[in-house]
Image (cartoon, rainbow, N blue to C red; front, side, top):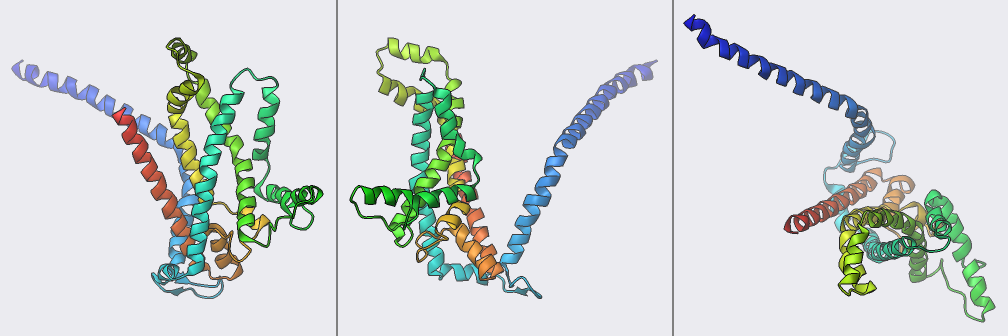
Length: 311
């Protein structure tokens, strides 16, 4: 009887532990079963191509024959390539100009259309409409507007007695035209995200601010801007990544010209990989773009996370 008394509790205690372990295992298997299709697709279409691109960036190949292993030579070539640094500078300028304007315009339009504005649904649709148009089609539309010889803008300028602008033959006007079209394409997406953030803010907060005597500008600066902080962080990361990966718009409108004045990293990678057929060098540029976007996203995530913890 004493033996049964000693071993009985151990036997009873081991039963529930085994059951809980089985439940956790079952839940884990169910969870992996749900996410496995996405994981398989990510491995096939994301991780494997990235690994293949890294391998390709360490080789010299024209796409035909046996590739030659050159190690870090393609990355060393980047350091001394003036066109690469010009493309890098153009990408940074494009990003520094388009991202703040997109964020500010998106927030301003969201605040405007979140109010009781007549026919706001129609205006929202007009602003969001460019999102459903492909980048190539948007570039073709932009060519009709910015074409140097008989474009819409130059026709208006000539009709007003002004000189036409050299949109395709001068670097600064060409970059301005690309920036304007890029802002037009993205502002609708920014507005939608900000609208979602604004509609999650309790109206009682604004009512309390009005009772305390806060003006509309103070409400906007002290409440709206702060409370849509998560939306701003998301849009900042998305807009910067989109700016560093811009391709179709510039490819259609300027092709990177004139004289590489609108060449960005992706168009330069395309030029080397598919036009000049230096695929290893083009892959190296693509890996640099990937590293830049990952580093920026990590820094922004750490900054946002630290700020949230402090608050």
